Length: 138
Image (tube, rainbow, N blue to C red; front, side, top):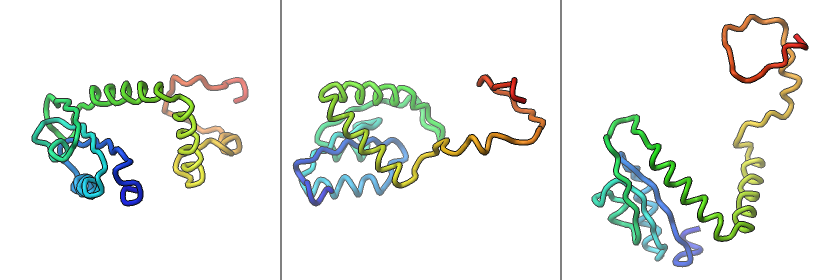
């Protein structure tokens, strides 16, 4: 897609430490084809930011293998929410195409046919759930 569309495209790249080499290579390829790069990372020294045409920096308070990214996810959620309001019908159309693609590719779990699997012999379960279960049919 990068080679085909080139400068008509915009690539939004999100990367935090440890910056994946494949992501950096993809940005470098996109730059060769004049794709505009918007980067989101943690520091101006990030390889994502140094390659980006525009950027957003969201500082991470600490670095570990289980970084707390809640503030990054909240920002991205708000950004996506606002972008969908720019052209709601196009956003709905794109989401429908995505859903169709992942359905064909069997990417996500669905509960189709689960009714047959839910009828099990009396089993003692030591797990509890807050999900309301139908206890009348047991």
